[in-house]
Length: 314
Image (cartoon, rainbow, N blue to C red; front, side, top):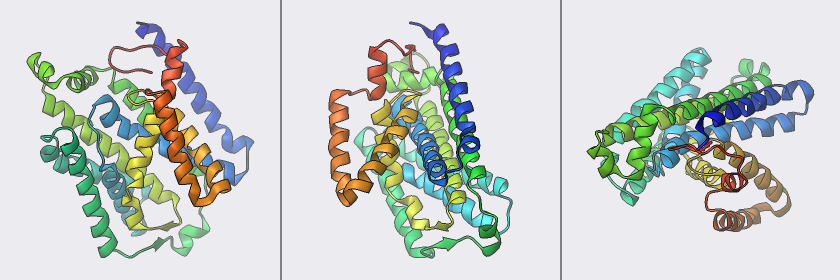
């Protein structure tokens, strides 16, 4: 076990990656490249939020889109009604955290597939309700549209991805993180040694939803035309799930690596194959999972580049 030596290595790589990404708008004025990098960071942050509960907590949440969508919807509406974006983002994130409590208290008493199906039902109910109750599209007013620039939104996404990754890295090495890992491995044993299983699961659920709402708020700030029902699409559950499993579920680096691979391959296949790219991508995903059940981080660990942690792997 190389816990002590692994921490400085992670910090060095992490700071180096942030510094390189921070220089991207300076060295490249290509809007297509900047837009792609923004999406990578957004997806990495969302996948990291799912990974906190699904990977480190062992609770497969198929309703993650509900928290993402609620954060996006509340942030967008408050911002367009005149509230400063920072305040709107805070309230949007708070609404997702509040819903995490309301949904988590009853749903976390369910086990296994029942929990997954229950959370999926919540997300679908919200998607249908929003689609029926709200206008199909929201467009930025002329004044906001005239001052729209991508660079500050890119730096916001970079800060978000870095902040959520750092928070997850710290959390899984804290006493609470060890408790979450103990519940994931064996809830009965965890209770026997004094870990309050429900409290730890609820805390992970609320924090995961809070992070998803934060990402949703940045997504709403990024789009010129915003479709409320699309923010609750199942894509915002299954894309981060797919990214996490590709990169390495239950690892800190996994969602970051998975996001780069996912978006690079998706864009390349979509340009060449059109709608057929979904089938090809699905087959490639199955191949990767069969060859590397632990995702790309499995290959990294096999080569000895990863510091093995007792309850969470870098």
